[in-house]
Length: 499
Image 1 (spheres, rainbow, N blue to C red):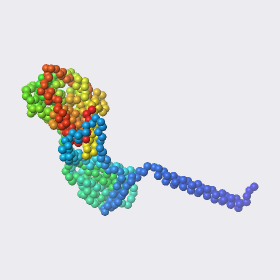
Image 2 (cartoon, rainbow, N blue to C red):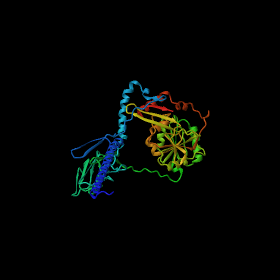
Image 3 (cartoon, rainbow, N blue to C red):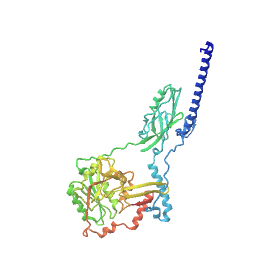
Image 4 (cartoon, one colour):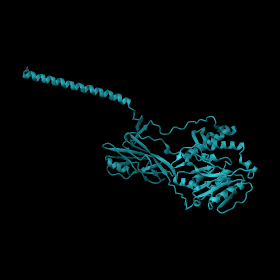
């Protein structure tokens, strides 16, 4: 049955009206659901907006301070488990307070020489329109140098204003056009403003930094700001090094010098020299000799240096190393014995292939005697904790499966001459002191041990025993105590363990 035309129109209108209400209702429910969950999701998501406080200084720059830490936490006290020697117990009580004051003063001077503003912990905040270099800006002291990579990538606006601030130098840029203004050129704070982002970025590309204090190795931190955004990046201020190169020549004699220290063991020394000449007829040998009654030791390419009597092992090492003119030297004890397995060329091959290495040790009759050094800095007052672990090593040297990286090696090693001269053997240590050199060199010397280069040890017989030598060879108890006292002050140690 058909409805009248007017009733049909009313029916269609009513249905359309109900449909419209239904659509609006559904949209309203969906909107409410979206808003409710958006708030919920916002609360559940990690807060990437780091807590900050901000205020403007008189120039209009926004000081944007993050609550993130700006430096590493200072190390806390290290622990000395059973087996460690607590070094303060080795100090006489009536000398302790005064010694601690001198040690604290010397440690502060050490920090002043070794710490840098470049060790400050920096964070890059997210979603920043600031472009800047994060590494590799190296500037000569007192020399104007462009800072590469500065730019602003901001949304379109009517004006753009950036701030650059430094502490140890001044900033400059090119004279601006009519579209830009520059304030503070030649000062520690540079402000650039322009209505054109293109012009602003052109001026940023021409910003230069000049340090105002001469220092051969320091740095500065540049603060770069735009609106609510801030970035901090480092500049290294460094006097370039003049290269010191060694002519390697064409044979092993122009590459390596053999050095040794002798004391009252001329029989063993002459056996050593004969064995060297059997395999290396032309290589130079340097002998440091502090015997009580020196004997003459002569021969082609042998340099024999007489020292005052009984100056000690490390004093002799320093003297011998000071006379080396080759890129490398090979250290041997005066009672060692070269054999067909004593291939110095293998040492040189490894050192040349891995130029970061400073020392490569070998094997004495199959024993490599390498060790690792574990060190915790501790706090400023008490000092650090050090553990020398015999047999400790890190991992294989890439490309040389017979070699491992370690902290120290046996008394048979090839060393880079200039690297060893920088660390130096402490002449206060006269007798038992091998490990102590590698302790002083921890963090400065890259050390490896290779088992395929072997030297022999001369047999101990009644004929070559020397009672006077034995008396000097074995340290008295007082010398061991002195060494611990030296560690306490010189190495700023709280405790030590030889394992």
